[in-house]
Image (cartoon, rainbow, N blue to C red; front, side, top):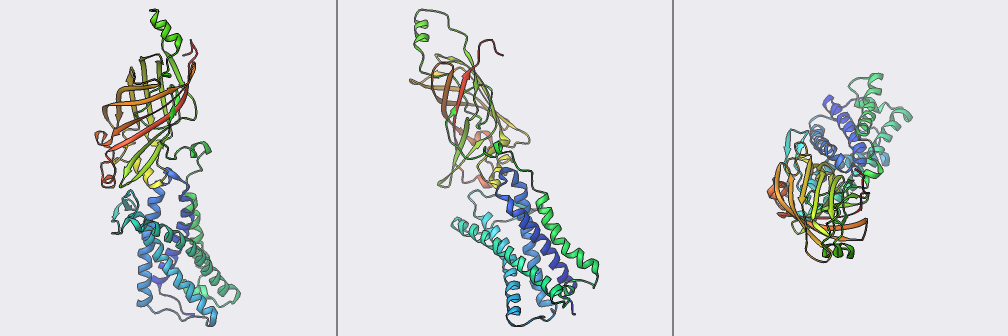
Amino acid sequence: MRRYSRIAIFLHWAIAALLAFQIALGWALEDLGARGFALFQLHKSVGISILLLTLARVAVRYWKPRPAPVEGGWQGALAKAVHGGLYLFMLGAPLTGWALVSTAKVRVPTLIFGVVPLPHLPLPMSAHEWAAGGHSLLAWIGIALFALHVAGALRHHFLLDDGLLWRMMPSRSPVLLVALPALIAAGFGLGRAILPAPAPKAAAAIAKPVPVPVPVVEQEAPAPVPEKVDNAAPAAGSAEGENAAAAGEPVAQPSSWIVQPGGSIGFSVGNGGETISGSFAKWTAKIVMDPDHPDSADIRVEIDLASASVGDSYKDGMLAGDEFFGVAAHPRAIFTAKGAERTGANNYRAAGTLTLKGASKPQSIRFTLSGTGKARKVSGSATIARAAFDVGNGESSAGLDPKVAVSFAFSARAKPAGMD
């Protein structure tokens, strides 16, 4: 039986193995969040590789003579249709993926295998939904065609016993008959093997956009945002505190507050008429304050910048990079403030310093306290000028508004007297 050319054989098995890898990897990417950024980049690199190899395969089809079809009738027509569909898939899936990246709200640079820059296609933003839908649809169609192609080849070779697989082998070797198809299984296995371990459920629930209020205070708490954390006890000063002050009694030692689980700190920024929202999953706060005497406030909040997420793997990966937070060199943002002032019945303002990405700048936050006694809640906001901290300094940030809105909400309890 006449064989395909050696270059056609090489391209066939290389593309098949890469497709199996892409299928295995692509199934899981959407669920990885920030942990999937590097794998998304790899997915794009492999996709462009498949596109280039497929173009070469098309050229070889017209350059090197192909063996004649082994079957006619409707079976032969079906085989041709599957082959044609596979070529459309191998060309269309990478192209729609490229279009998807090129029309995203935030332009994520692509380096093929970390070396060769891939330019964005000159497409309008309105094409994004079309590209996303087409890419997803082609992926499922491609999987079905891939399965039909494999089933058809096995039917011919083993059930019809016509030796069809030998046409796609460089020699009639039983070893190659096993080894080359095994490349497909190996590609699929590798795609699954490089996936990170599932994130703990608690961690997975963290990273959804969240401009929310946040309870107040000291100790570790999950929630994001560097500049805002003022936890002072509530502002509706108690009658006892007012009476004591009126009588000229000495002011009691301000309380330390412990942040309770469930708080959140969110951020949002305009982007070409739309809003990108996110949150920080990890932060700690140490807060000392007498709600009746806000000038006693002593606040320190540290935010783990690597925990920032906007709910999109591409963008989450960019947040950690030098264009935004530069997490490798500056893993934490710190807000400190000494003293606060009452601006209304339950409203306060704290002026302090925000240290972010190696820069320390004045920063104020506003917050509202509620509750009485040992349990308080706080919700507040702040506005940060991102350029002052060199956050968003690249081409992909060109459409972002200059100021980032921060919101926070959490609960806190006064630390028992005598407790360190």
